[in-house]
Amino acid sequence: MSFLQDLLSLPVPTYPHISPDGQKIVYSTSLPYGHKTGDHFRSALWLAETGKRESARPLTAGEFNDREPRWCPDGRGIVFLSDRGKVGEGCAVYRLSIEGGEAWPVTEEGNSRGIDRVEVLPGSGRGDGREGAKLVYLSADEKSEEVKAREREKDDARVWGEDWAYNRLRMVDLDSRESTTLVRQDVHLIDLACSEDGSKIAVSWVRNPDLEATYLYGTTVAVFELATKALTEICHFATYLTDLTWVGDNLYSIGPADETTAASSQMVFSIDLSTGIKRKGYTEQAYGEVNCAMKLKRLGTALAVGIQDGMADEIHMLEGRRRESRVLFTQNQTLDAWDAIVRPDSDEVILALSTSSPSHPAEVYTMSVSPLSPDGGRGAGTDPITPLSTHGQNLLTTYPNKLNRIHSQFLTCPSADGTVQLDATLFLPTRQSTTRPPHPFPTLVTLHGGPYYRFTSTFAPLIPHSIFTTLLLTAGYAILLPNYRGSSGRGRAFAEFGKNGGSGREGYDDVIAMTSHAVREGFVDPARVGAVYKGS
Image (tube, rainbow, N blue to C red; front, top):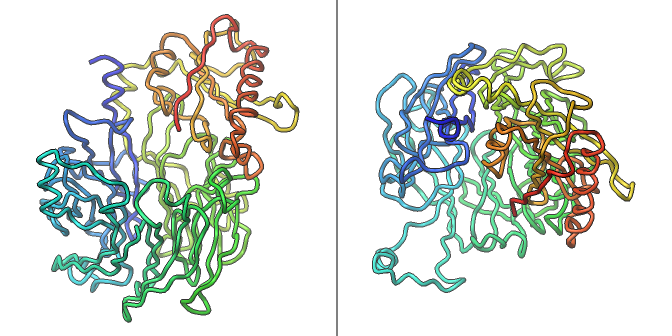
């Protein structure tokens, strides 16, 4: 096979999930650009031991689209989504023992509607992980026989606004497989979060499944109480909310700092439920002014927050209603996916990370961090980072010359109007960093979409948005990735340049300013430079 074929066949790890005892990690792998193998999407599940080097082994063979694994309460089995019942079309929840055996369905195998959100209900089960444990999830009602017949006969023209496939909140017993619909309304549920005792489930919804509904009508948050079957609306947000997370008496979520527009930085909002489940407002909790919140995860009695801070990807721990946080992990390269739990027998935090470097494909790593460490990250109180997987080993050993000759570095310069500092990632077809190369390189300037997005250091042959960068890097070209005004990672003022077409004005000027800076620094050959724009 060629380098490009092997690259496109590379397993990329994602969705790591740490077992309740902190001893194991389950995750899935898929192809780099989410493309199909043959006629269908395929993804495999893997199991690794925390802190044990190169311990990852496959749980499934990759014949189906097995994805989004989660642990059962006892830590001896997992649940995951798959199309095993109808390859390429079906979607159901399956269960698998990590000790071996076949996976078996928990929900109906023949269902064709997707399952958008899955969570094991805390506190359910009797400790053995097989009896009484429950799962809550979001899915739409199955298509009627009339709709299926119309689709078969190609008589499936649709009128916008008719026959919306609204997501419902459902619960299924992992042992009996009995399923119950908990919330059925003419709204589209998009997220859920369980209280720590499992007695309540918070949900968020938009008016309909249309992609722009959240921006047109906003997002509503409500709480469903299992004992009384009561559904109480808590608050309404003007645009989008993501990552609904329940910690103690607080609901947390991520939304735009300017709640009226998506062209703003992302920050953490909180809803105080300590006075009861009733209509109330939300408050701005943290982040968003000089950085951007990207992901939330319950971490014992605290909140783990993934943020972009300039060119760094970080994981912070936010405790209670305090606005101060501690840095658990930081690196100046892309953190593709992560999970975190508090070790059951101590106050240490275990992190599971999926990340890469310019010359090394993404692997799964673990590390332990003391939350009392003053600097967090990789400083005092931190165990060494341990690689658990070797998914890129074949590529590294087969094509060492193609991968070892790639280096990345960051460039900074003032904007043309002198009001902000700009940054960019520059990938060079050289082994080492240099303040000024011996000769300028022919260069492709690659622009991200969004505009709320950000380039930082990552595995160079798989730079997001364009496989053609691989061919150019191996042919001796440089790749310049500017982060123009409107990008993420720099906080509210920087992101809000994306309003009202600002990325087409100041953003355009920023790309020219950064490219001119790279020319002056001797990296870019002005006679051999071009640009490509990909994204939304």
